[in-house]
Amino acid sequence: MHVSNSESLKKGPLEGITVLDFSRVLAGPYCTMVLADLGARVIKVEKFGTGDDTRAFGPFVDGESAYFLCFNRGKESIVLDIKSPRDRDLLEQLLDEVDVLVENFRPGVMDRLGYGADRLAKTHPHLVYASISGFGHTGPFSDLPGYDMVVQAMGGVMSLTGWPDGPPARVGTSFGDLGAALFATIGIIASLYRRTQNAQGTRVDIGMLDCQAALMETALARFDVEGVVPTRTGDSHPSLAPFESFAAKDGRFIIAAGNDTLFMLMADALGRPKLALDPLFVSNDLRCRNRPSLLDAIEAITKTQPMDYWIERLNEAGVPCSPINTIDKLFDHPQLKARNMIIKVKGEGERTIRTAGSPIRIGGYPENDVTSAALAPGLNQHRESILRKLVTGRAGYSTASVEEEPVAGSDLSDPMLSAAE
Image 1 (spheres, rainbow, N blue to C red):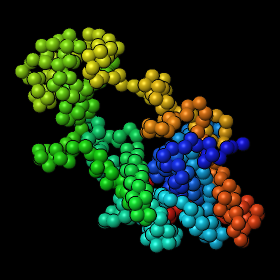
Image 2 (image 1 turned 180 degrees about the vertical axis):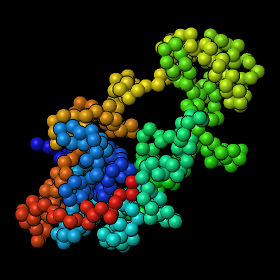
Image 3 (image 1 turned 90 degrees about the horizontal axis):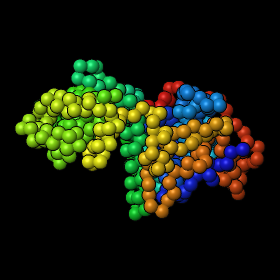
Image 4 (image 1 turned 90 degrees about the vertical axis):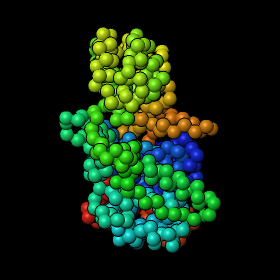
């Protein structure tokens, strides 16, 4: 038998904050997962029958989606039928109790359901209302669907990813969704802080395309200054050298000597101190201009020994470097293990899966618990407990109404109301 997620979750700085989570797939659930990791109570509202779309995404463990388990740990699940007067009344009561609402429908969907930001600002002025969509709630593209791949392409990051002689490439993780999730989290926490000063909630409007533009580092400024369109540079940094991979005797590894001092230390560690005095390489600007010659000079040295040999020498000299790890190497990485970053998650089955925990360390609060599994909810698992907390002392409810399931045909399961992701 499951222990309630809200009871099993370790407390954090957001203890006492309750989040009503209307989101699905990745950007919204990742945002609310971070809030749950920080101690908030997250009540996940799911559609009748199938729940969050990702419950059907593989791979599966004991019949449950590992994808869903990863991003919905520590939450409670309830299915609501917005067409049912009883469930609408329940939702109104929840809105009285919660501090934050997160949704990632296309703009206009929550308004049609009767729970748009403008209406709730009048009826529930305490509420922080966060929306994540492809393009935000203003502008000519606001009504368009915005999947991660679309905003990666439109926001320019694909044009910068890959090798110069190859086609544009998608970033290896859902960079568009995850960036939007983190900006939404920042906006929510800033709004909660502001509420402590004026007792008023506010609207947080996050567009995935906006977030992609904000994460372009200096690409926009470089074009504005140089008039040259930035493009793919493989694994090298466009403004720093050496800052890329190099061939050793048994594979490739990274050297990131991002300033002149590090370049001199690197030359010493490689056993070629005169390399730092070469007129072609005496400044970062010259090293970038003469990158092909620089790479040839360094690889003529690094190819003579295996990776571990060079990594040990470079680490001793204080030069940033690394092997290029595959994902399997992360589970036993000594630094990640020391930081309790690999946690276990389980759903209604007995088997656990391993995934990354919260990277946020705040003094006075516990780190990730790696001794027991964090729980992800079964579909509608917490309906009864949520109802009982709300209906105590209220007229018009009975034990039977607590145990009833929502009916099919809920607005939340209407395919026309697809998520923004």
